[in-house]
Structures are given as C-alpha cells and as structure tokens.
Image: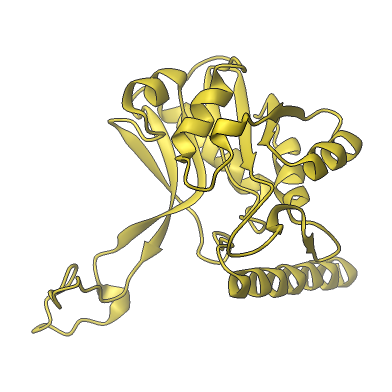
Length: 234
C-alpha cells in the first residue's frame, strides 16, 4: 500500500441540463443538489482536495460561499456542450490539478455516502498496484436479453430463481479512481486491471430524468427520517 498518496476528488457539473433543467443546483430536500455529494467528499478523510469543474456562475458563487475549502475550476467554452465526452472534461481538469490518484463522482448521486467513498478509496489503496483503477458497480441478478431475444446471462431452459443466477455488474457511474497516466494514455477512466467496487442499489441511485429526481429525493427524505428516528430511540 502506498503511504499518504495525494487524492483529489473531481466533480464536473454543467450549468445546463437538457432532461432535468438546472438539476445540479436545484433544490433537493432543502438544499442545492450538488451540496449532498460535496458534503460527503469533504467529510472523507482520505480525500485531500475536492474540486468542482463547472461553467455555472450560480455554482461558482454558491460554492465559494458554502465550501471555501473546495477548489473551483471554470470550464472553458469548448468543453461546455452536452455532447462533449466526460473524458475530455477530466483531461482538462487534471492538467490543472496535481494528484497521485483522482476520484471522480457526480452531483447526481445524492445518496452516495461518505463512508462508502472512504471504503472505496481504502479498498483501492489496499490493492494497488495489483489493480490500476476502480469503478463503482451495481450487482444485477435478473434475466437479461439482447436485442435479438437471446439470453445473455441465463439458460431459458433451466429456470433458476433470479437470486441463484450468476451475478452481472452494471457500471453505475457513482465513482471512479484513476491516475493521470491512465486517463491520458487510454482516454478512459478505467485501466487494464480495474477493481469493481460494489455499491448497494439504493445508494447508487443516479439522476438522469425528472422521475429519477423525484425518486431520489423521496428516498433521501425517507432515509433521513429513519436516521432521526433511530437517534431518538437510541
């Protein structure tokens, strides 16, 4: 295991969003959505610096006021369109910020806990360099089919219970850990020997559409109420 590597967390956020307008700074259970992930990254003891990359003046002004320890990068105009690949955005960011490892996540993962982020970082450090990168996955045990109605992960003639199926894993975009060399060489956050870090389905909820926003907010509020009830009982 490396001793005290410098880990920088990158959180890219665009001002505009086609499917959920203004989602990054929209109210989410009483506070802007992006506050949830930034709070949890700042609370992670293994993260040395949190960096927001954005073209949004709203986020720049709000983050400077609420998160003085967070570094803000202004995204240049040629990287602001929604069609720009995320890897290009990240390549621009890592050229400005030095780190041994970069951790990247999204503001659209509001249920991702600081404890889980810490566990992922520690798991990666404990297994580096056997694994050269890490990405978050969600376990799936369901019958999957391709577009030609061919079974992907099961034998239709043997009707196993879904919980007995061999698991497959969905890349959930909750978090990635990578080096500058991997991103610049592969133009990808995932290296040749990635560690798949499993995250519970509930915690891995991602906001892509309006329905996702409503579901994530309801789940967050319910989990908060359960935590408060537990504290009162204790």
